[in-house]
Length: 413
Image 1: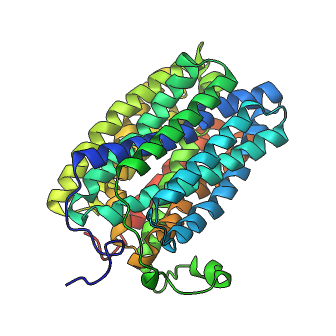
Image 2: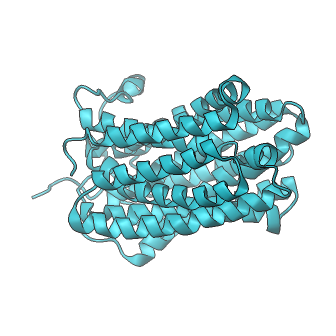
């Protein structure tokens, strides 16, 4: 019999559709707050501030912001693991992260130069990555293992909707730069508030608080690959998928404008995101159900990495609008398949229940680190190592390596 408090016990009761819908909305707001700026607002702002050096400005801002996220995500996750508030461990940090992220978006709305733009994006990254750490922890905190791929699929879909509808929001519904940032801030706040107010968050008894002084907290961030090899392999797979995805999508707006020569890159981006989104839904929902029923995870990740690599290779050999139309749904079904199964795998290889949010924060570094590495790598590739074909080739290599990494995990089928 599990004698641990509810906050640390392994969940056994299946979550209901209402809870899933609220988690979906909170994640939707989070991803919209990330991707509407990354896909549209930050590139547009970089071009307004320095048209000749827009790629460099964009790379600096996103790279510095991503470095902030490397610290914020596991640190806030660790703090939430130690929180004994009567309001719960996660919800206070979810709301605080949303408020900080919204403040950063508001600062971006009035940024007069690259320095202020960078500070604003760093605040967004710090706040939203704290929110990401606590929302991701809802999966092992509340969802039984046999339901995690299905719920993981919904989380993947929320990311897609945040990406697609975020682009619609800031290109169709709110066309001004400042208005776009403020609209994103409102959606972030709404998602966090509704989830925190309408869902339970078990309080951690003080007696069960993880030990150690504040000075020891940095050392607790380290998870030994030797002691936890499957965690390390799952982390590596997640990083490589994130790197491949970032290399393939980070400069997509510029790709449509400069390589494809699309007459309306903003509209072209929306079309591609729509195709990507529909395919992602199919992959995430279908594979999530199949994986939970069969208990198999790794095979679906191998298929997903192959589909994403094929999408990238299409653009290696053809930088055309037609090739992009075929690549977008391939990438979508691959990423949807991966995201559904990945969350199940990652939560099954966590080292300890007391450190769920911290350990998932370390996992989320695998999401953030590509945003540091990809701009630097992409800038070098675009400048002297093959241009856009070289960029998409690097994306394909990364995703194929991810497929290999997942086969090395021993404790998950």
